[in-house]
Image 1: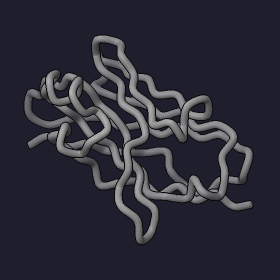
Image 2 (image 1 turned 90 degrees about the vertical axis):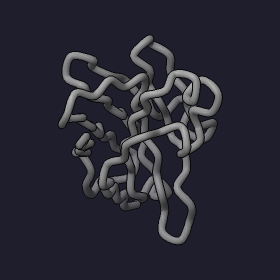
Image 3 (image 1 turned 120 degrees about the horizontal axis):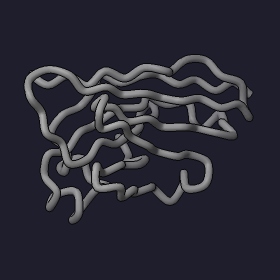
Length: 127
């Protein structure tokens, strides 16, 4: 069983910064990419960013410039640095891992490209 464990969420002030982490563990797991989605109350889960172990990154248009995704292959971990936090960043962030290069290349922004999901970490930004 592969587990993705997110950490780093919490209550933040608007304008501040936050770094989310996600570590993969469990049985031998070879992923091609790890990424982040987010979900606001009453809304569908949406793509945020993805990092591939070949060094490619994908970002949703609404986060480009404020968020940076990075990864550490040795630690099977991916990180999301969030700057200039806004109240609308108050959502649950989910980590996801994808094993298929073709699915990620074709549709990195779609949930169907990912095989494993974390439980989510809440980020709350107060104004």
